[in-house]
Length: 532
Image (cartoon, rainbow, N blue to C red; front, side):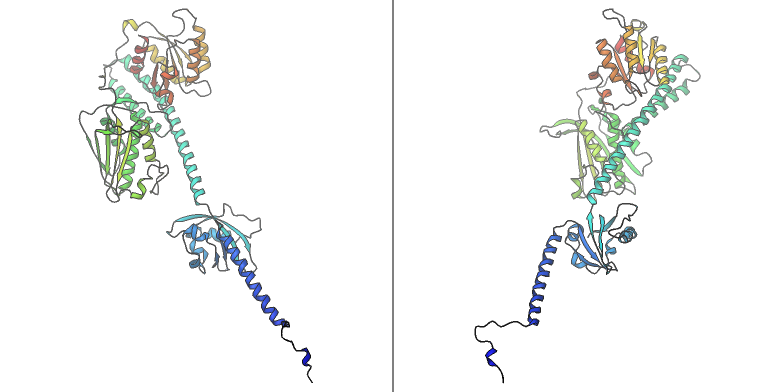
């Protein structure tokens, strides 16, 4: 007989069976897991590094949204594909080597664990790979940090340091070479003067002198690769400078240059060596745009321009260089003056940047016009000089009788042979010379000969080498000499034509400047100007 008194009555709670409790627990657990996954996905979506999980066959099981942001690829579409297919083929062996490491071991690869992944355009992205965990199932959990920008900055820094090293090397070589040329050219000039124009070896000596001048021009080109100060500007006709610079730049090239120079152009104040550097850079760019050869049209003409930052126009002389190359895409034009911007595989992106700064130092302007497939036209414009005409060059005369009295000259140069050669050049002109190797001994020699308030005491002129190895240089020396004798007459000499002291020697206390190598005639002309 059943006991119906135990049946539930209306309003009584009905106890759940164990099976029902398990179902409810599972539902709650699923909800918690789902919430945990949503939270994890949300956290992973804010991580800039790519987080990945791959199986034994390297097939992708999980990627966070950083994959899309870094490489421009769909993480969903990448699921199930082998991770190595997104790595550059040349880096796949390294990728396998990195995956072979254990996350907590002390094993390291020989270099940074960095490999290149391909983005949506097939371009490289440098990724720093970290293996965080290897599961018992063989799956690997890791992350990828995009270090592309860092690598680019490191590369630019190395490039800058390399260029600075090349500049120092070129400047040093040019300086030493100019010292050697000073000895050769000075000795040749002395021999020419002793033997006279009727000497049977006069022609051979002339050839040797011309060779020295050509070698000097080479050193000036070397110096364009070294860091210098402000340009040493002189009034010049731009046409011959352009003709010479373009001819040098096109030597041995497959490109043919056509130069047209308008007549009766006004003079411009320029540093010819730096203008040659500008032309060299522009011609190289044009050559690279025409790898199979082509035509280059150069025109020099009078023009008007508005200086950078100015409002009113100025008279100028322009050089327009037009090539028949591939042209520059419009989106690249606004970047061409940025350092290291280049679309060429072998370019360093510094050519047009150098051109811009040289033109800026000349108070000139640079203008670039180009269309893809239609070539490029570049115009550089220099302001017209205040000097209207060049003084006619005359053969330097021998010192007149009024200047023929022996001058007492103090020479300072750290190179023994250069110092002796300069002394012989001065002695061949009838002067007496005292030689010193560096600044301290030079100051002591000048001080010993100088008696304050006594006319004629001291030296009539001091010739100072600007750069001295292991001693006091010319700049230090002139400061000390001016303290002893504010009326000291000094000439600075250097193989560094682009040194700031050479470009503005009077501001530093020098009355004259000689660029090594200098000729006997040039030395004589300076002495005549200063001593007569």
